[in-house]
Amino acid sequence: MRTVDVGHGRIETRNLTTSAALVGYSDWPGLAQVFEVGRHVITKKTSTERVEVVYGVTSLSPERATPGRVLALVRGHWAIENKSHWVRDVTFDEDRSQVRCGTSRK
Image 1 (tube, rainbow, N blue to C red):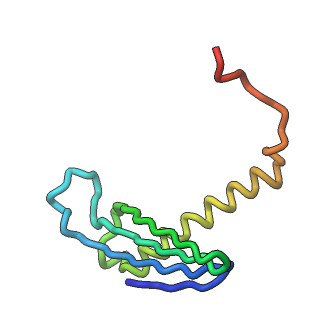
Image 2: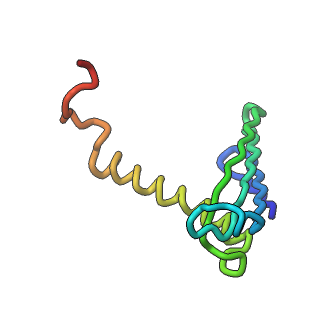
């Protein structure tokens, strides 16, 4: 599956490949699929490019999680991460907190 998104000053292409070939071969508990997400990002303003590849496993069967669904789940993870950090940083003003617990130096 391939998607292209244009926005926020960049062009982002994602390629997702899923496979159930490792089911029964790997000892990974609950393994139903493995996947690879390739991202190619071009920043319009600077024309810089970034390429990354990430791999994952899921217990969702191919019937329950098509490549499109897996990609939506991977992307949805970042919405949760970003929302959580925003709450901690903005609502709780955690970045400006002066409360510290100990030191890393001994």
